[in-house]
Length: 108
Image 1 (cartoon, helix red, strand yellow):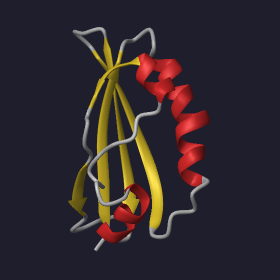
Image 2 (cartoon, helix red, strand yellow):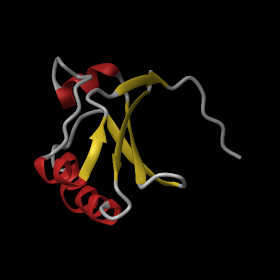
Image 3 (spheres, rainbow, N blue to C red):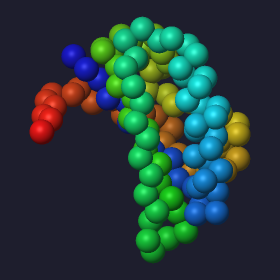
Image 4 (spheres, one colour):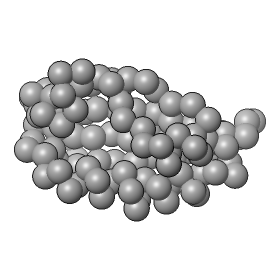
């Protein structure tokens, strides 16, 4: 069964572009370099929260199975990894990722 690993992080509007750059130049390349079996893709979402000085980022990683997630993250697979460079610009973040079973996809 396909697994979606979802994580949230928040930063200030001032630091949002800087964090996105860290994702694109450090975080994603380091994940891709691992050649993780069963890892299919990562999707990144961004939204500027209107009434606050925050920008929320969501990452959704897609794996073939929970065993592939464990192969990526280890036995404490819920624990997230936030590199030091990212911690310096994030205001807060989920300490654990949530793992959902993908039950259906429809394309039109």
